[in-house]
Length: 301
Image 1 (cartoon, rainbow, N blue to C red):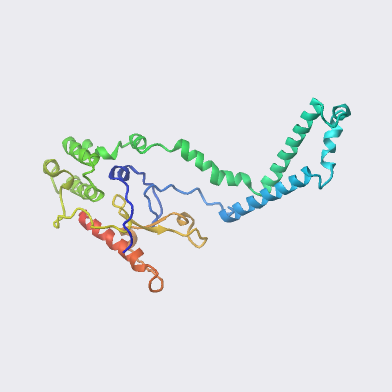
Image 2 (tube, helix red, strand yellow):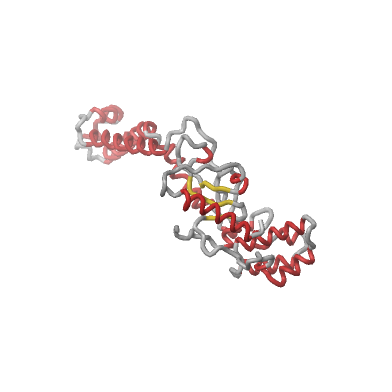
């Protein structure tokens, strides 16, 4: 049996963003990919070309600096500056500064030439700039939750909007105290939908929540979770994560390199797992799906 999957705290799980995505994409903290660029250079080739261009640029500069190509590259400097600056071997202050400025100009020209050859600006945009944006722009989970139009989901704002303030207070207190799980949340949400549909009264719902809190509307077995989980589940999106889709041109662009997940709608179509015995079909596909179905059963879904 695989090791249990690491799980975030309930509050962090509930506050995590979930964006719209294509079927089969893990939506928990998913960040949509930029539009596909047909002429986009693959990452391995881009980094390899940038490294080769850097080494070539360093080689050319080394040849110039050590005189293997002669002193021809210094002629423009001598033509544009007075000879008196170099009467003492270039030791005059003006000569010293002119040499440093000229060397800087040559280095800049080499950087521009080999930077364009090695696509260094693309390397910066794709790999370096996102690190700075993530460090400066990513809000804390609490700030992100507070900035949502619907408010903090831990406070159960949709219950408060319907007038069930006391029930929302009890559930929010249990969530902050660590007494609530994702299964409890999904189960209570299912009961709340029955209130919205008119199959249960608001007074009965509020009374049950005030008496039982996070344990309200429990499964007949009394279980509120599975004994162990071997996969990552998101009961808010009804998904189970199987892994990461391969970064391969044969996969659709929106699926490459992102989390691969299954939900009831996808499972309701068809599923074909191909692989030799022992390749992980049972442990990495069948078992997570069965876990997902069991969790949905415990949540009354």
